[in-house]
Amino acid sequence: MNKDYKILLVDDEPDILEIISYSLESEGYKVSKANNGLEAIEIAEKEIPDLIIMDLMMPKMNGVEACKQIRKSIKLKNVIITFLSARSEDFSQIAGFDAGADDYITKPIKPKVLLSKVKALLRRRFSDNDNQLVQINELVIDRSKYLVILKGIEISLPRKEFELLYLLTSSPNTVFTRGKILDVVWGRDVIVGDRTIDVHIRKLREKIGDSLFKTIKGVGYKFVN
Image (cartoon, rainbow, N blue to C red; front, top):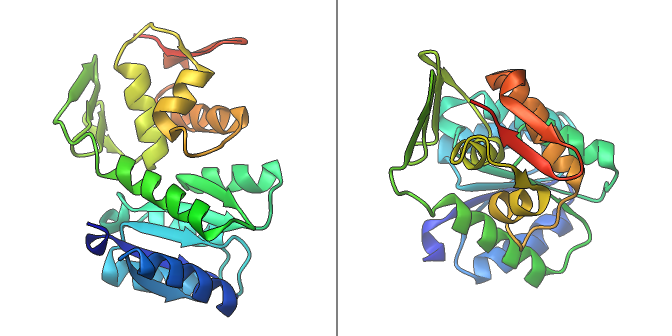
């Protein structure tokens, strides 16, 4: 099944590209490589990968800027993007998620662990195609098409923002704990901090409406209709 998945690796270190691409290709994935953000955008537009694994700091165009540009492309709206960076600071991770990344993995990481994370990301990407539709007032969410329409206008959301919105709207006025949100949206195979949820909620408030999301201090969040 892995042979059907296309992965784009983006890093300016040849050794990193070689090691990771070898591990992925050994598992049957189709792997393309780029050395910087500009090259990544060009290859992504041509090949439409299922997953992009991208370094943060690179020449010509860094990962954050490349991620922002990729997210503007209609053709690439469903591509999963994860950063793979040696920078582990909170502000670097937040910048990555603000740019539209679905995940953030910190180097160094063992090849087997990376493969496990890749499988988890792709598994969530291609599961749940069950044509579920949520409609709350003027907000329509089509889970099968990853489509959000607000007041007749399509809203483009990165995958994690979409999954978080879908979870909260699946049961309006229900409080979802942080643990539940992390488990459903990110999965047990991915380790992220509480601030990751806060960043995604803030972005949803900006795009969907601040008053629709209520914070329950010390517990979690709920969607208010």
